Image (cartoon, rainbow, N blue to C red):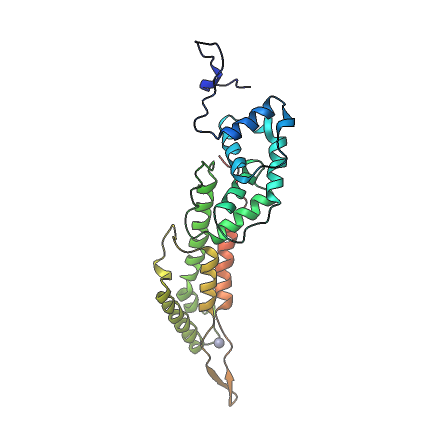
Length: 261
Ligand SMILES: [Zn+2]
């Protein structure tokens, strides 16, 4: 079982027995893993809570025992995933996502759902859950920052787009659109959002919240143009421009995940 270079593979010279140093591992998690390894499966519960499953994941990763316990771990992980998904971003979502990923691959629907929720709603680095997340937290932090940056870079190209007549139907229209957008962005400052000064890791801002704020800036002031002697309520806005930027960010957000370390 422990045929590796770990200290636990060397018998104690005093009693000739193998000792497992479990000071950093959860005792209950260790007990369940040992019961699987020693085929004492009648002692195993049908369900485990997320905390315990996460502890088992860390233990299993440390000893590289995923194959040995995968049958039971997948049953537990799937049972845990059937619990109601929290609509609030927090420790529960991070644990669910970590557990789903630890006992399956990156195509697992429960993992993808949790990862997408974190990427959309996290307002900073993934919170510490008191356990090593085997690279998951870093991976999600990096992905979230990149997606927000891609979206903001696109937004910062508005002036260039306006110059090249990409949006708006006339010079007057483009002047109105640009002025309207800049004024609405300026209004956001009162709520602490300075779009042109946001920097990674974008603490305090989720991808989801930023898309909402940008959408609010996309509508234009109401103004009137004259055509054929008639006064027309001008219809142009920057909704499509903002949607393009959000879409660029989402492409980054939704890229396939590589395997965890
Ligand atoms: Zn127009």
